[in-house]
Image 1 (tube, one colour):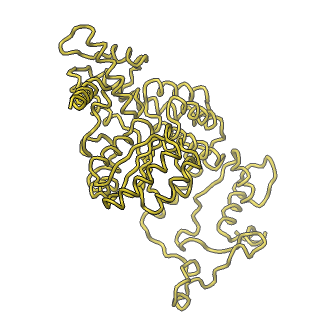
Image 2 (spheres, rainbow, N blue to C red):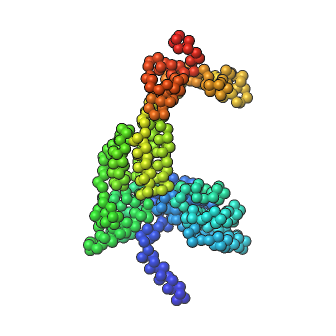
Image 3 (tube, rainbow, N blue to C red):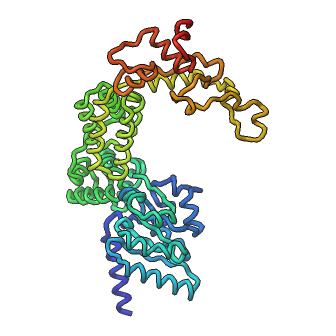
Length: 460
């Protein structure tokens, strides 16, 4: 009896002295902040949890986004037994013991078992393989949590038997709500600027935001204020980082300067504006998205690798996170700034959309689907010529509705790799030629598939 009393007292003390992030851990799904795409009303993960029908799953996302919290909420709602292990400490022996207990539990009490495995990516191949038979047979329901890309870190057989749920970094609104809850729990107040600084510096990590707030409240309490009021200086001291003034207008002005610097091929200016944004706590995903757009809008066919580099930087922001991902962003900035520039993709799309906007224009009969029964009787596919049957790999053939057949949308520039496209479309590979009016007509005719010999050019 005394042991129970001591245990209860210890539990109460721990509850009062636990870190703020742990004390604020949600007790139900409605208390959870963020992840609306998974846990909003009627969303997939919420529906599975509430109906206690969750099958094996992997929760994948950056630190502080709610993976462990979701697993604990599952534990509080399921009728199944819930077992928790960390892959850092668990061994194959531990896994086998869980499987043996699950088998006994199922046989004696007809009760299933959920195994929550934190940091599942830390399990090696042999440890993951040991889980496979139990997951495959349904003996256990595995919930794995990982900050790493499961396509790289989780064995394909185990991954294929699990549903992947990707958690996103918390946005500033969600972080702001968390911080306000933290203030109420601490019985404190805060300046708006202080909360904004804590939120932006947390980089989507709710746990980090609450930990920083706890330190800031302690600093404010030292001044004997009642109640403690967290100032911007407290927030800066708690984070060890000064706040950079960065209003709404500056947000748009600086991203505009950043994009124009890359478009203008100035890598030093691009790096300067990137640094300004990162220092101010700008969302790195926003920066990465703008670079992905620029890669096609302002570089395009002049260097198609630019889109690959920009997309890789965006993925690195998700997989690596700050501060390390700033190197990936800087890499992309230098590449995009120094790449040859062309906006022909942008202008070509604009011209094509202008014609396609009204939805008119019949598909030429020879291009229509001829695979279904009766299509041939309608004339579908009749006269279509397969380009690969021609030694040149292209044939003289109409590919657009009659009314738009003479329109030309794509005009290749002579910048970077696009110069080769320009020359290929002209049917030559000479260096240093400039595009004349006759050249443009020749390119136009070649795109239209009308140039079959030199007489065509003369007649036109």
